[in-house]
Image 1: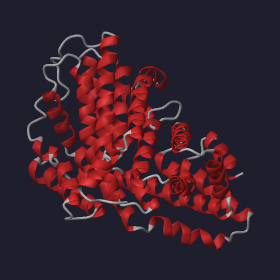
Image 2: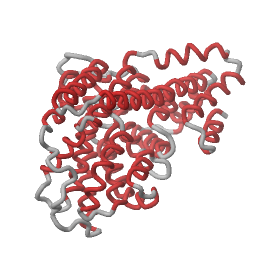
Image 3: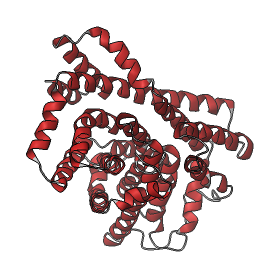
Image 4: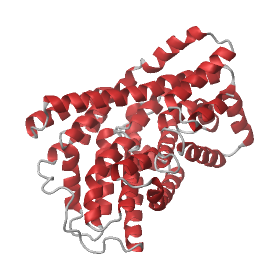
Length: 422
């Protein structure tokens, strides 16, 4: 009943956080679990030190976007493909990878890159639906490449080292990005898009002063791997660095702009933490009444090989990703998957990256992929038109996912180099 109620509320258009909370409270009341359990559960789900990184990374991303660091990253990426036909499609993915290493959010990356790239790509001969589809796919790298909010949530639920997860996300992010680049070039060639070298650039001279933006990921991740600060502390460092660059280097940060940044960051952080709190209540209620145990037993008893189990989980996550956001999926499915990980001996770092890549694909998968709706709104193109091209990028990302399934060392290599364990 808990899942039927939740799905009905989603279909009716009720916000996900409310749907999760109502479903959980319904189970608590009907099974007499004690309404007094709501407040301690609500508090315990959000009062955790690793989760403090989420609002700070959101704030850092907003600061770096608003003060002009995003445009600088795009400008330096443009120089890399200056003399290549159809280069803007490749540049868009490169810029998506750079910006993912700053913001940690797929929808935020999509919104930022769409506003910068789509107008320039349209001038250079790219159809707007293709450009929007490519930017949505590039934006999905935001939850794969560290610092990723999704990885912070996964680490918090499974008690896995966030630093190890951040290290594990580097190569998978690059692999997915390379697959998207190859696909974008092939689709451009297949449909004869942008045959000539582009003369018009998205942001003229924007590469000047780009070094301050380019070093940002190295400051964030380098400090973590060098043992200087924790992932949560690195988020605070990113905020301070962004404020310094905006106020003292670019001189674009004003009090009015800072106020707008704080308001937007507050709203985004509140939305995420509401989902975290209510998803935790639903997960606790479902686990307490035995729902999660029954589903876990079904999985374990019906599948006996690791490959079959991973295939089943991937299909389930790809389907769930079409309708739900990453945070909700973590809280709904991880109570089921954690015993399965132990039963089949799955490495939690590797398993976490497979989940995140799946959820990144879900962000661009119709009918409810959130990046599709962000790109559609920002580019003023229908989701249906974007989806025609998005199918190519979904296929490319799935091929990258399959590669990561069969070559786990691609995920575990960097954590081993830095001696980071789960």
